[in-house]
Length: 95
Ligand code: FES
Image: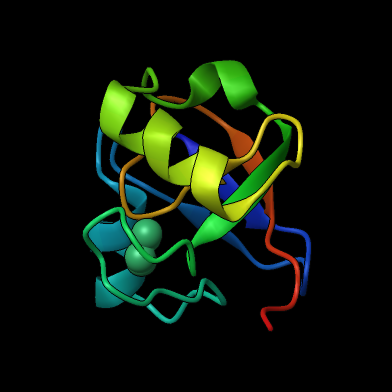
């Protein structure tokens, strides 16, 4: 099973392959922050420090939302990604 590591506190979780980061985070106490959970507010924006290739492919909805909320290279939206393999996630402090 894939392992997600959160660089903020070093916590790691084994997750079922293909699960959405949102679904997993809601069911477990991960340090991820979410807002709308619909891909529009940008609260769940994060950067994969490693394993970016192990996230689900970015679709237009996510790309459009990211353009509005961040100019950070490689950023993704936690509420729209699926976990396909090991990944390390950095989520900066919100506003
Ligand atoms: S929680 Fe709002 S965009 Fe993901």
